[in-house]
Every structure is written in structure tokens, then in C-alpha cells.
Length: 262
Ligand code: ATP
Image 1: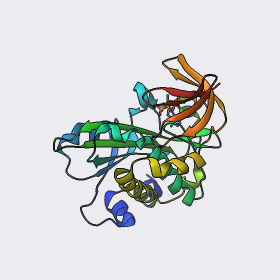
Image 2: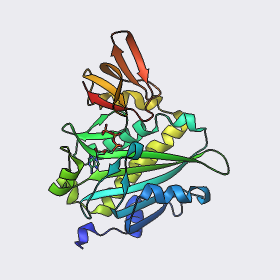
Image 3: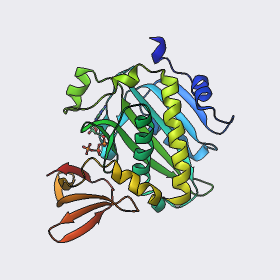
């Protein structure tokens, strides 16, 4: 394997500069899904864990959808993070994670935008996806497992299997991957700390500045059924999508619904 693609936990920790023991970092060559791995261990976790896979064979999206990637062409990792509050306080978390990723990518000269609730877009196509799964922590609060898939290069055969045009970031593919992961981890950790303390409200204006579909006519669909249609008007302090419909403005909770252009 090319040296640039090699990743190891010690090098990520050195780049991250974490105080020893603050976050456990692990790198595996291959696994089904880093989210599934960490969820299975959530009950026994004591500290945040970053689990990076060089290759995921069964990457997951929302509602049972798949996240596809080929070895050496993507970053696939999950971060298990403990929140003291109840699950309902995490509704805006996928959006706050989007803001954190956008900040980190922007700082690396890859400007991106966000599509509600959980996609990172580059020039209108999906560059990264976020999947958050949760589990009640035995000692109280919730473990959130925050999965991120980020395309660095996009092989034709993977794009064909995905079945739509998607984005990649060849510029980042040249970077030392340990440094890249460490930078994303740093942005995530800082923003998760703020989210734990103050919720989504401080992220709202930042998210809206990054909103890819502001003013765009859209539909909200659930398993193929159109639930609402209107014009996307950004998000509110809880991360709900504001939709200007014929009957006035409504706020949509993420759940498993999908957003499409009308
Ligand atoms: P949608 O993007 O359809 O609105 P979603 O945001 O809920 O739905 P996710 O569940 O987050 O999507 O991600 C899974 C979807 O992402 C898959 O159904 C597929 O269309 C797409 N996808 C899968 N792998 C990739 C990839 N490597 N890059 C970009 N998109 C991908």
C-alpha cells in the first residue's frame, strides 16, 4: 500500500496532539461498518473512541441504505462520544457535525455546503455523509456513534453502483491521511464539546450560511411518499428544516425523511 494511504493510530494521535487517554484511537484494515463496531461496544466504553477503517465492506447510510467506498479512496471512520443529556437533545447533532466537517474542509481549501439533514456537498454533489446512531449509556446519558464517510477519489465503478453523480476531493487524497483524520477529529471534538454544552442554537447561523438549498423548491419524502412540498428556508435553533409551504411555514424534524429538489 502507498505510504500516504497508510494510517496508524499513533500517528493520528501525534497529529491530533491529544492529551494521553482523552480519546482512544484505533485503525483497522477492514471491517463491515465502523458504526456497527462501536455501537456493539457502546455499553462498555469509558472514553470517546475514534475507529478508522481503511476499508468498509458494509458501510451504512440512513434507513438501511448503503455507503459505498473502495480501499484507499475514502475516509471512513466513526467517533463514539458520550452526551450527559437525554436523547431528545441530540436532534440537531447531525447538522452540528456537518458544520464541524465543513469548517475543517474549508480550512483545507475544500469549500463545501450542507444539505439537510446530514450531507456534505461539493459543487452540489455528495462529498461526505454522516450517520449518527445512539445507545443509552449504562451510567446515564447517551453514547452517540458518529459515522463519517468522505470521498477522496471516486472510482467509476463505485459511482456507477451508487447510481448518481457524487463528489470527491482529489486535493485531500494527496495529504497525509493521518494528518487529515487528525484535523477532522480536532474540528469534531471542539464542536461536539460546544454542542454538548449549548445545543444546536450556536450552530444555527453557521449552518444556514452553508445551506446548499436555500430558497430552492423541495419535497420531503418518506419511503417514496411525498409528505410536504415548499421552499427550503434554512433551519431553526433545533436543527429542524423550515419549509415555506402554501399553508405557511412549517418545521420538519429529521427522522428518516429525505429531501429532494421539487
Ligand atoms: P439522500 O442522499 O438520498 O437524500 P440520505 O442523505 O439520507 O439520502 P444517506 O442515508 O445519508 O443518504 O446515505 C446513503 C446514500 O448515499 C445512498 O443511498 C447512496 O445514494 C449515497 N451514497 C452511497 N455511497 C456514497 C458515496 N461514497 N458518496 C456519495 N454518496 C453515496
